[in-house]
Image (cartoon, rainbow, N blue to C red; front, side):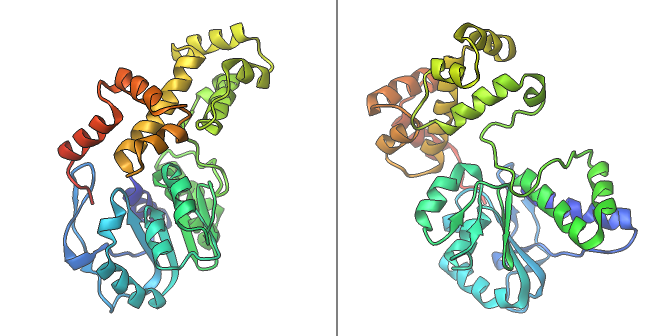
Length: 306
């Protein structure tokens, strides 16, 4: 989706303008197909080589970026980057820009799942939770939908608001976000307008995953009775507030178990469990395996994605 959010927006702009405003090439290391996590193989137009040049170079990556942006590829990128006016990182592409030193002293973002680790790994970068960030001649985006927003922003800046609206319309996309809107952990969709009190409660839960609030505190923040908050959650989500809060924390723990190498004790602290045993007990109830067993099983059954 991140790839399509970049390419199809440009294609849509060309179509609506009835002329070629954008042209692009897909480039991969060694001219090999890029196998997406959904299994689709994306064939390149050209290999990564020192002859490449253009207006914008966008580095797009997802899982396991460390091994896919190896030292050889980073050296190649260092040689061709001066041949481009703008350099962008989509999702984990931000990590590659950081490793190249292109974001030092600048503002940047990446996918919300990685924001904390990104900031810890790169203290010289001012890490923002925004959907997309532009600073100097670099831009970074948090993922698929924010990349769509960024490309519409690019069209708006270069070719005007009318074309940006027309491109949004052909994809039936409501472009309601700006770059500095925060990336949400939970995309609330219609719930935000249908029942804003529940939406605010969930946002509070997101903000306090590592140091959970009591349900009574959440109710007080929203000026609701505990009974009313319980009623709203059961009505809208078929869960009690406590059940939903635990679900959010376990989801976060599951992601950290599969997508990072953090010790399980550290994962427990980051997701608000006061002990390793407490996390393990709740994790096993939810996923039928302990965190350690789940991580081992995940590694055995999942192929390395590109």
